Length: 226
Image (tube, rainbow, N blue to C red; front, side):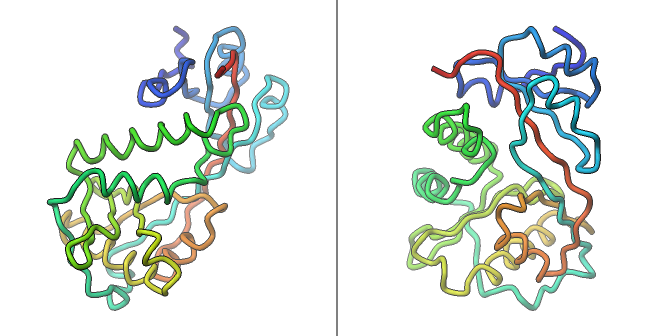
């Protein structure tokens, strides 16, 4: 296998094609993907010339921004009165995840069937559960939200549809961030959010996060998902 193609088995387990991430954006790397069957991802500086991507059949999938926040800039007072639990039913977490994560780049990739994109995100959340990286939020003994973190990375967070749209997004997110700062002792946290999710992006900015330059994500498929 070419040095430019890094297998991503956590993705390929969900699809009938092998999956790869290019290790760099160069013509040599794009050529390496030209004759290999599979699904390919490459991350590119937003200001980079995209001509080579189009030449080799890559198409735009998403952009990921990188909000970051130092502990002394975090608006802790925005946190709601939220208690997190390490004991929960995994099925409750998966139910929320399946309903909440419908806008990812694999869902918007027109080559990937929605049910396979669903499976990809479901398996990711199952991995996080198995790795004990998820904390649950409960109301009246029922799981109504959760968040996952690892070291300085805010991996994901979600609320049950029953409590969305009620002005709880900011206090819930703030509580998640506060909990992570306290548990990890880190002085800085980072996450990644697509601009296609402006509501989430705005919540983090309102809590003291700032934005670093993001990456444009391009995909290519050699082969078929059917």
